[in-house]
Image (cartoon, rainbow, N blue to C red; front, side, top):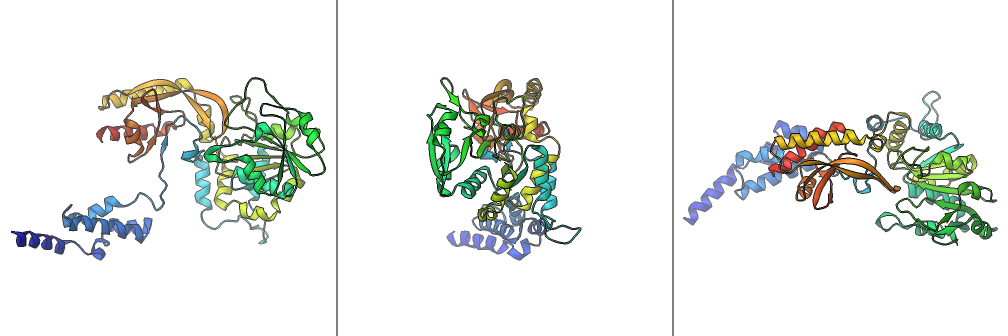
Length: 440
């Protein structure tokens, strides 16, 4: 009997197709073009191994290899952001607009990023994106772009304050996500910090008393992801601009002009009009663009920063420049659309989805009112009325690991799929993901 079983196993193994034969399958030939030979061969070998262990018939190797192929050559997976956090750092913050995505695709090949096609000589890198940025912030005499908001502040501190002092309020020595502490960044540039005031109250007089020959600039930092309320006092930019040193303002979230829904969120235009010499900000937050750091302000200061050796290490690539320009000049961004979405319309969407899912077998799915937030260090304390699909809690993990990952939030023992950050055109994809979760 043992010999008979061994003979059957040997027979099965002889029937397993060779790798080169499987790779001639047209579906796998196409996959090599799309994914490269490595992932395709790995999928074939995995399918062959399953056949060797009797988990599938040898005739199923090609089909199984196709099923095992990765969706794309990269490891990042697109997800549906149903968390109710518009700018979720763990999900990559702002979603690019269709115009920005097209701009990235167009810029993926050779471009004129540093070439004047008319004269054939070298040109200013990213000139059209920088012009677009200045167009959106008229009070900025010049602009520069680096690879993120922290880099913008690091470049300013390195170029202007290495070996000198930065005067900063104790209440603005903040820590943000993942343990990142602003004072540590500033000190790493070689600057010395001169702390003034207290955690809750700092006056213009506190700054004035600290300014001396070693002062490079006064730094104002937006607290971003927290608020101090009650017995508080903070010196405004206009007050500080009257002092005899430059004022650098880190607004954080990248709002370029005032927004009616976010009256307490600082913006670049207002801060420059108030007398700031330089404003730093992020491009992938409320601006709704790619990850980058923005520097806006006095022409001489910006020129000093852009010509500093560190600027080369922090510069952005052509894809970021393309996406940034399209964000600045193109149609409404997904971030802007989510921020201004009508709560009643969101509820109608939730009700339609809940009814459709219930009709196809999803139990205990209902539409509920809820509250969303901006996120990404923007507009702390601001909540936005929203609507969500409410499902039993176990759905959360199943949806995250589905063919189209959906990330919601847990609240009151339920899994909420908040629609404020979900574009309406993704409603059917969201419904399909829930149906798939029911089947699993």
